[in-house]
Image (cartoon, rainbow, N blue to C red):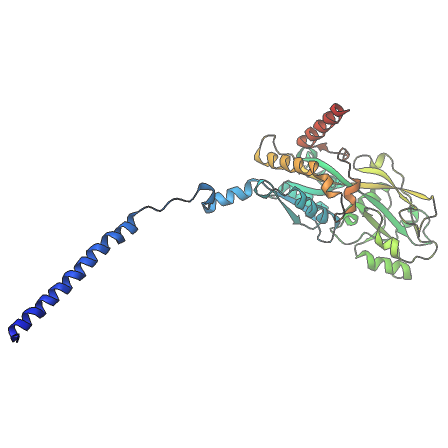
Length: 353
C-alpha cells in the first residue's frame, strides 16, 4: 500500500507532466502563429487591384464629354441620348446629355459652363451674342447639321398676309423653346410688329379655333410635320402663311417649304408654301488643337461619324435617316476633326471606285 507521502509525490509528478505538455503545445503553436502573421500574401494582379479614389476620378473623367441638349420634352435631348448610346465606349468614351432650358441656354452653357464640351443649338442663337461677344463665331465650331427646324406661321381665316398680323396677337410658345427665341427674331427681320404672347401652343391653338382672346396666329419652329396640324380638325380658311427667303435670312437660315405631303389636311395636292428654316446643329467649343478637351471631342466625332448607320435603324428617331454628314451650318466653321473625317471618307470612296 502506497503511503501518503508517495501519493503526494505522484500527484506532484502529474502536475509537472501536465504543465510540461501545455508549455510544449504553446511553444509549438507560437511559431505557426508567427509564421502566419509574417508570411507575405501574394499580391493580386495589377488589373485586379482597385484604383485609389483620385486615380479612379481621373480615369472616369479623362474621356467624359458633356453635351448640353435642351428641354426634357424636346427633340434635341432625345437625339443627344441616342448619340450617347451609340458612341459609348466604356472608359474610352462616356457622353453625358444635359437637360437645359433650351437652345439659347445650350449655347450659353457651351461658352461659359465648366464640363460642357458640346451643345445642340439653333444657328440663330449666335445672334444673341452679336453685341456682348462679337467674336462668338471664333469660339464655336460645328460637327453636324442635325436637321432643319422649319418656320410654321399658322393663322386664322381672316388673316391673308404677314402684314395683316401687324398689331395682332401672335403666340410663340413658352419661353425657352425655339419658337420663343427665333420667332420674334424672324418677325423683327420681316419688319412686322406683333403682340407677342408666350403661352403653351395647345392653349393658343384652342383660342384660335374658338376665336377667343383675339389670338390670330401661332408660330412653330420645329421639324416638320407637326402633330398638331396633322391630327387637328381645322375649318376651311385656317392656313400657313408663306415667307420668302431673301438676303435678310442668309446669315443663319435656309430656304425651306411646307408641302402637301407634309400636311395633306391643310394643303391641296401639289401645293407648296415657301418658308425658312433654322439649322439645328451639334456644335463644339473651339478647343485648341491637341488639348485634352479637343481630343475628347475628336474621339466623339470619330465614333459618331463611323457609327451613324447604327442610328438609322428602327428604334431611333427617324430624323437620323435624313442626316447628311457633309451638310454645312450657316455662319459657322466645321470642327477640324470632323472635316478630317469627311476628307478621309472622300479619299477612301474615290480609291474604291
